[in-house]
Length: 115
Length: 111
Image 1: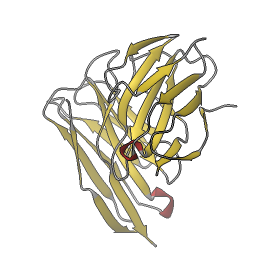
Image 2: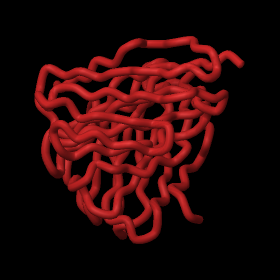
Image 3: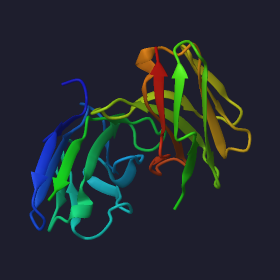
Image 4: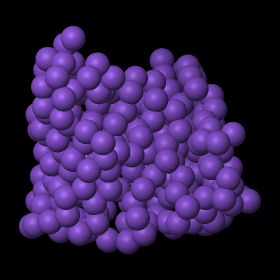
């Protein structure tokens, strides 16, 4: 597709379960970002990749959160032992070149609800 | 960490009115951007600013990068119903650092 694609669009899970969220960036974009957006808030940075490597993971809240991008394209955000406070919309964005312009192209997000 | 303060938090205006919103920071940013988010969608870039003092327009939208590098404003002229949404400012302190977003200004337009 032409834009950033995220799946699933909605995920409801129980506290303690493991969750994976997938992001397929715009073709040819080398930089990929994960943000988290809680209700009534702006997006908060989690991690970004330049190619296959995590260039900055300083926004990951704790070690239950992990993300990979093994082939430099699709990325998966993994959350272990989910907690109710993890409920939010997880946004993925891509950019042609990491960092230089700050212009990000966002997907529609994956809404995670932890019961 | 760095924080951006956006104001107002929300605003209700009549169709046809002009709108102004702003964003301030305690620290310097080298790039300012304005995004709009519709319900159930991701933010979409409206305007990007790269130089202090820069004034840039995109149709009915005009944004400025403050001289101090610590603020930016967005104006919307002659508002229309499709302007409804949440407007976010975002700043980047230097290349390769992630964007920091404000909490947004929720705009409602009354026809």
